[in-house]
Every structure is written in structure tokens, then in C-alpha cells.
Amino acid sequence: MLALFLGAGGLAAGFFLGGCSRLPEVTIPWTESPRESYAKSLEQAGLASTALGQAWLAAGRQALEQAVDVQAPYRETVFFDPSDPGAAGFRLDLRRGQRLHVGVVTEGDREPESATGPDEPLAAPTVPLVPRHFVEIFEAPRSLGGESRRLASGEREPAGEPVALEQAVRRDGTYLVRIQPELLAGGRFTVTLQAEPSLVFPVEGRDSAAIRSFFGDPRDSGSRRHQGVDIFADRGTPALAVADGRVLRVGTNRLGGKTVWLYAEGLGIAFYYAHLDRQHVRRGQRVRAGEIVGRVGNTGNARSTPPHLHFEIRDSGALDPWPFLHRPPGEPPELELDPGLLGQWHRVRREGSRLRIAPRRDAGLVGELPRGTPVALDAGIGDWLRVRLPDGRRGFLVASLTEPADEPLRRFRLESPELLRHRPAPGAPAIAELLGGEELGVLGESSEALYVEVAAGRRGWIAPPRS
Image (tube, rainbow, N blue to C red; front, side, top):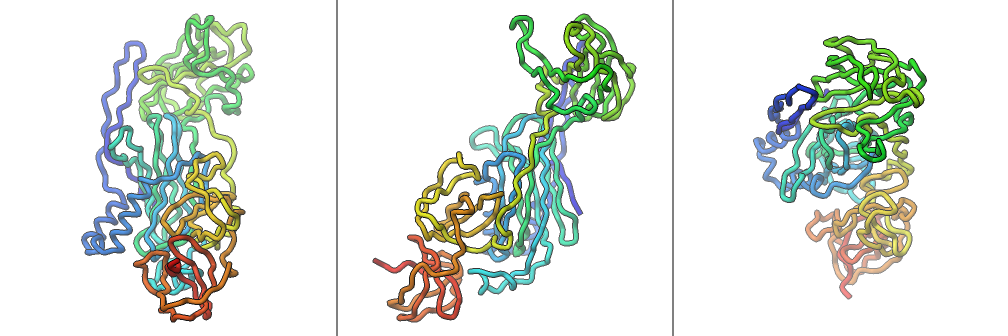
């Protein structure tokens, strides 16, 4: 079951068109999101003050504060450890007129007792095969110190359908997406982010490839700028309503020739169709998106050009139609790694491997890693991995720079007793007490911790020997 909410804050919509005045401001009332309701239930149950509850809340904050910069279309498969609360955050720049689509599919879920790798020894409560999880879209703060504004949210319940969340972008800016499973739930999720056009394309059978003159192009020797886009098509090709709306005006003028004005009440913006060969609507008529409003032609000052539709979008001024109409080409790459490896610890196989802040070769560096550095495989994106280091740093590595931590890099004997821990942290739960003189195989090493295998085949972490 998918629950969809609009967040706090108001959205103003309006336009000037001839004698028309600005529309009244529309305010959308605040509604509690599913995640907020869940957090409140944790507090009421006394769980929010526990270490696990605090870790869950902190993971949600960190997902927004340290969101990964991505570009749509984007697809990531992420693993959440049920015993280690986590969340995923993504940051992307969008333009007014686009529609952000967020899809989250749960796949390959497993219960904690069947997990492999270093987390195996920890006992954990049974988790539903399809855990409940929360998906949210935010507008990032527009000024330093501001707060993110939630725009939409949804949840996937254990017996529910995959989440598909959409949000129309009302203004250019940076937007955030957060995905977080409920406490003590985990598994593998595939997240897809798409930036889609919000309008039906205004010429039947065409797409943005047919646009050959763009918003802002010079006109009349540079004395004015193009206020719309020109979409070229054969004479008589249907010109379509881009949204549900009402016809404001049907007329003729010297520049535009035969024209139609359409107003979409739900969007608070108007659309101008010019150079039409024929008009198929009348003033005051209501039309649905995709219905024919006219036919492409070259009337008005376009008589010397091939037939085309001049299309404008008007609010309080002219808006660039491109993001309203353009669908970014291509599909996000499929994950090349076996998704069953996510959640395990691997190690760096090449000295000086570059850890980057985003899954792109031109992204900034987090650092260069020595050979043998342990890395937790948190997520996969095409041929990239999102990894976590023993010191808590996170970043992206090309998958070919890692290898399974199966065979020891070297062996040594403990000089004194040592605790074998569940995670590479001094206060992590202990798995076993190792005796002095016991032989260990080093599967990965960093200055913070050694990932080791003991004689019985158990794996865990110890502090590096003092030099």
C-alpha cells in the first residue's frame, strides 16, 4: 500500500496574461509523513532513547546531510544491515517543469540469520522478508542554515507494492531523496531516479529532437529574444494540449498567425500555440491532455519558414519550455556486480586506488587507498561500488579495484589475548576472546583495525598490533 503526502509549506502559482491578474497563493496544509509517524511510535514505545533508536534517527539525518550527488537517470542497489541502522540519501539538481520519479523495489531480501560475512555471529530478531521502508522527497535549503522542506513521502508495508513516488518540480534547485527501512529491518533495495518531462509533448509523434530553435535565441538581429521553442513537423500534424485545461483565447495576429492560448488550472500556467495552420478549439472549451487543439502550419511571420509550432509557457513571464518537454536520453546502467555480494567486506586490490565522492571518474577524491584496505560493499551502481571504510569514511570505487577478502594477505601470531569484535570499532560487540599465541590470517588491514580470520574460520576485527 502506497501512502502519498504533500509536505509543509505553501506553493504560489500565477501568471500575467493580458488583463488577467495573478492567481491567489495556494497553501498546502502540513501532513505528518509515514516516517514521522513511525519515529513518533518509537518515541512512544521508549525506543527512540535507546542506542539503537538513536542510531536509526541519526542515520536518517546523516542521509540528508551527506546525500550523494547524482544525475538522473540513476539506479543504485543498496544493502541495509538489519543490525546496523542505515539510510540512503541522494542529491540532484532539477529544473522547473521536470517531474522527479523515485522507484524503490525490494529484492533478494533475507533474514539476518542467513547472512554471510563478518556480521554472521550477531543474533538479530527475525525480519519480514519484505521490510517496511520509507521514501521521501525534499527540496534542499536555499540558504545556509536553512532546513530541507519535505515535498512528498511514501511507505512500503511488508505486504505492499513497490514504492513509486513522483513530484513535480516547481522551481529550479537542488532536491533530496531519502530511503530508510524501519528499525531492525534490512535487505537489498534497488532505487531508480528519473527526471521526466511534466507535460505531454505538444506535437503528435514528435519529441524534443524536433525542437530546432530554443528559448532565448536571438531574434530581429538581437533586438529581442525567443520566448519559446520551435517544433518542426509536417503541415497539418496535430498540435496537442500539453495538460488538462481551459482554452483562454483563439485568435490571429501578425507575428503568431493563427494562435491558441490554453490555461492549466492545476499548474497555474498558460501555454501559447502559434503559426497554426488550423485551430480546432473555441474559447472557454475544456480540453484534456493529448487532445488536438490545432494543426501545425507556418502562418503569421513564419510564412517563409518550414511548418512548425511556436510553443510558449507563461507564468508571470516566459518560462523555458525545454525542461517541461525534454526526456533525458538513455537508461541508468544495470549493476554489473553480483548483488549477493552487497553487505560483505572486500578489500582494495591495487595500491593507490581512488575513492571518489560520486560514482564518476571526474568526481572529487575522498582519498587514495593502500592495497589491502578493507571496504564494506554498501551499494552498487553500474560498474561502481559505494563503500565504507573502517574509519567511517564513505565513497565510491570502481568495482574492478576490489577483490573478495577470502585468502589471507599474511599470517601472524597474537602476542597477547585480544577480543575479536563484530565491527571495526573499539566498542563494537565482542564475538570471541582470542588467546595469546593464536595464529590469525589477515584478510584486510588499515590503521584503525585488522579484518582477520581465526583457525575455526570465524571472521571479525581486532585492533592493529602496537608498533
